Amino acid sequence: MEQRFVKTHFVEMNLSDILEQLGEDETKSILSSFACPLNEDVEFFIKHRAIEFSKRTTAKTHLVFWQTEDAKDIELVGYYTIASKVIKVSKDALTGGEAKRLKNQGVYDDVKHEFTVSAPLIGQLGKNFTNGNDTLISGSDLLTLAINKVKKIQREIGGRFVYLECEDNEKLLAFYKNSGFKVFGKRTLDGDETGIRGKYLIQLFAML
Ligand SMILES: CC(C)(COP(=O)(O)OP(=O)(O)OC[C@H]1O[C@@H](n2cnc3c(N)ncnc32)[C@H](O)[C@@H]1OP(=O)(O)O)[C@@H](O)C(=O)NCCC(=O)NCCS
Image 1 (cartoon, rainbow, N blue to C red):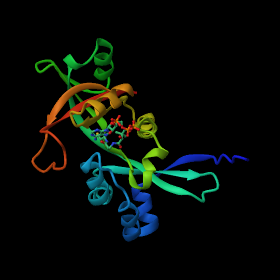
Image 2: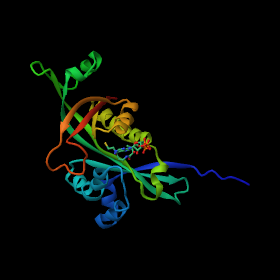
Image 3: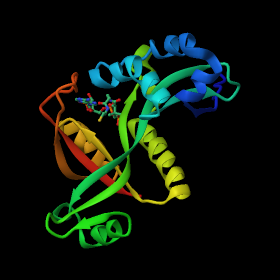
């Protein structure tokens, strides 16, 4: 029997562009199909916060679609959100080389032994588990797309440091550590941060 291999690739779209092109109702209807049973916060954000955050420029969301070469099949497979933040990093969490690199990008407090650095936060990242769409992309492919976006931004404006925050979960931590991220701290949750398991988030960084 003849086997046909259909070529596919990922297409990324900034939620702000989708909103501009399709309007809010149609955009909401695309987002409503997103499901992420492993992480309530990731599903809640894309359905109820992402549009507002994109409009206010608080954080920008990028949708990732899997598409066949002929564009006949297109599926929403995941998303990530990036925000511009200022973060404090203890010198103790860094190697000598990392501290040297951060010194060029941030301000060092000699008393507290910490750097204050402006850095992109990968605030959300998740695969879409609706209709098995999560099998069309791997977590590392999705994270690579987010990292490449950060690299592109930093090539224009400078910086090498990127960070993210995740629940204290062995599998999530292994996922990020395998992709080159390193733990540098813990952040206690704010009262309005619901849908997250635990009382704090683990903070991880990478030097790109
Ligand atoms: C994190 C993610 C992108 C990794 O994708 P991946 O590398 O392709 O790996 P998988 O989806 O197969 O998940 C790997 C394992 O981690 C577990 N896992 C993933 N997210 C988890 C979460 N939020 N809480 C607990 N376990 C989780 C999976 O159940 C799986 O466990 P198993 O090995 O026992 O089957 C993807 O699992 C995902 O979208 N998770 C939900 C959203 C999320 O938690 N994002 C991180 C926010 S910080």
